[in-house]
Image (cartoon, one colour):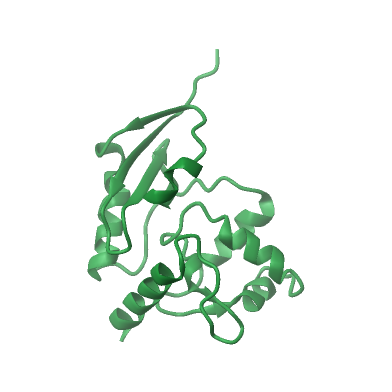
Amino acid sequence: MTTTSITWFDTLPSPVGDLLLAVRDGRVLRVGFAQERHAYPREGDWRESREHVDVLRRQLQEYFSGERALFDLELLPIGTDFQRRVWTELSRIPYGETISYGELARRIGNHKAMRAVGLANGRNPIPIVVPCHRVIGADGSLTGFGGGIERKRWLLDHEARLRA
């Protein structure tokens, strides 16, 4: 007999719009922008619960209020080995700093993989916590963000303000 893990979810109002939070087996599965809700994979049993996502909710609220720069959460990012390597490297970008896609490719050991890195960055299932918003174009331009450029700009400005 196989048991299906329950995915607990809730919505969090934030300065960048409502966020859908999802946790499975005590690990963060998804932080997404609520307007994308239709795009979320709904395999298995999804149930709404504020209690089960409370730690994630609290840490995100602390981030948005400027009380938290680092997240202390167990993550469950679902993706390919390559995507998970990119997401791990994203987590190493310091709060309030940015790097280019080329630099991110270099950091994972393949300086020619800028396009693949960009695609993996765009498929990050746990934005904000895994800070894909900290990756910018080589010329300093704000490029590509699943939540939109305005949200990316807000997140970067928020971190720059608080870091200063």
